[in-house]
Amino acid sequence: MPPLAEIRWRSPIRVASMRRLIPTLSIALAVALVSGCGTNSDDKGASAPSAAPATSKLEPVAAVKQGMDRSLAGQLAMEASVKAGNQSITLNGKMDPAARMFHITGKAPEPLEARLIGDAAYLKSESLEGEKPWMKLDLTKLKPNSALRQSFDMKAQTGIIGGIVSAQEVGEGRYTGVADLGKAAEAASTDAGMRDGLESSAKLAKDPTAIPFEATLDAEGHLTALSYTVATKSIGDLVTEMRMSDFGKPVTVEAPPASETEAASAEMYKYF
Image 1: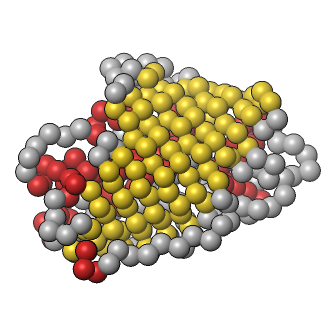
Image 2: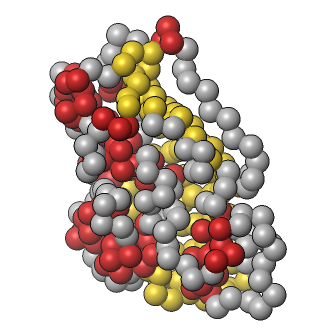
């Protein structure tokens, strides 16, 4: 996840505004799936979002990792926030990773909205400064290493969950523990865009090997809440919190009205 400090880009011209939006959306969408599929859980049952918990209780590290796999195996709703000093991102969204449908609204710090339907991404933000409220992007036209394309790759997000090194249950379904950003980066896919972000976060952290986290699992083994704090060298504590719910509830995402949408120009694709 890129540092929150990258949110603020200052320039009145349109190109600079688009560039400012890229890290904002990258952070926002990465937070939405901060610890997605691909945590390499050995539990094959983790792909079933509504499956009953295993008869034998998992040890804490495995329970948290499997909990995230279980949560993101199907449709869900989420709330998330990232705070650093007086800067913050707040998000609300719903998604269906298998169907590649995604809808998120929030402030980062300006209002933003993003929708994904297959390979069509729709973005709405003052930073775009287009003739119409919405801009439509064809993700297949983006470069493989595009930050925006990687942000929409729901199978690629691995986040800190892949770097958990210790955990303990402190109450029914409540866990605390420590994650290592270096190990998380090693566990991240090399072509998913998250490895570079995690490595950048590790450089920013005072102690990247000891990132404290708290997690909550429900009775079905879904991870319903996750929070962690990265103490940084320059911008204070970077605090991330997220909650997930509505597992398995059908998700529908509609494209914005055609009259309010304009296709991204060839020039715009250069910056995404």
